[in-house]
Image (tube, rainbow, N blue to C red; front, side, top):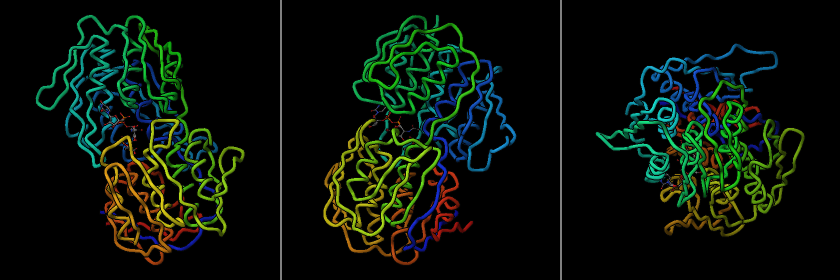
Length: 429
Ligand SMILES: CC(=O)N[C@H]1[C@@H](OP(=O)(O)OP(=O)(O)OC[C@H]2O[C@@H](n3ccc(=O)[nH]c3=O)[C@H](O)[C@@H]2O)O[C@H](CO)[C@@H](O)[C@@H]1O
Ligand SMILES: C=C(OP(=O)(O)O)C(=O)O
């Protein structure tokens, strides 16, 4: 298994291009199943999760083509991918494919809406919580699907197609909102989704579906209204920038010190995280096409946060923020309200010398003077990158094991950081 070696202590200076968002690209790719025409997606990141979903779509019979390089396209500007589901041969998504990545479960919605049947393995467990799919199933049942669980599979059928309905989520769910949107787009009649997720990735999916001919209003608010249509067409859509990658590098420079320009991204996608960073003492400003984050001298102020659905502080940046707080001048309190077990990074940050106490959904971080490099283990995607951030600021060498977690969600991580002065290298197994 590959490892990453980091020798900490260098400030980060330079420019980092931000990739397309993994969490937008995944539902957008899945939306290709809604039409027999070609969906062309621009700015798709090169990530293990994207490759895993490509295999799943391939298993259904979706044609996948990576468009050759265009003028101005570099390895850091994302790839253009064409997906054509004109010849779907299998409506089953098997366990060995779905268990590697949770979002792949969402194929259930377009398969059911377009073909009237889907058999999709329950998604695999994950280190951040139990992550049930009851609300996704509830949404499909409201739209008229008959669903049973059989041998670890969710088997969904509809006799005469899906019908528009009122779907009121008792809890905000991003995946539930994606599934409801895709299914309702091809259902007969009107669907009203209440307590919908307002995440930018939901808006991106709704924008793409609209280009495909769907009739959707209210995406980005907590009530989305979908007027079903009989068929959808192909479209061309650019994946929005990755707000979590943006926030991750912003936290990194706030911790190591230095001056980073994050380009191909947008400040409005992560306003709450950037406000929090400013409160820690980092200088955050908008620049054309991106964001500049600086910290030159001055300590890190402790700041309390609570994770919340968008527009609140994202759970996917909680671990990275905790890494930053380990060097703050005092105590900070970090409350995780989305996932019940998303503190796996705490014990690994402790190996670097961090002082963190856990009390249920609360982590109390006592800032220390310095961190010191150590061997650590990546446990999940965002936890892993919090260790990278900690290691960049620690004295001496850190060895991060199990970096395949990082490869799920951070495109060209070592190259992007090394170009800005980090001493980081991958040791291939
Ligand atoms: C690929 C992708 O986009 N993943 C993101 C997505 O995950 P995902 O879509 O899985 O997360 P959800 O928004 O659905 O989960 C939010 C909460 O609802 C609960 N829940 C969800 C569904 C359900 O049927 N029943 C239920 O109880 C979950 O356990 C969790 O406590 O949103 C999360 C919350 O912003 C992010 O951390 C993930 O990075
Ligand atoms: C938790 C994440 O992804 P997933 O929902 O695919 O596990 C994430 O992107 O941080």
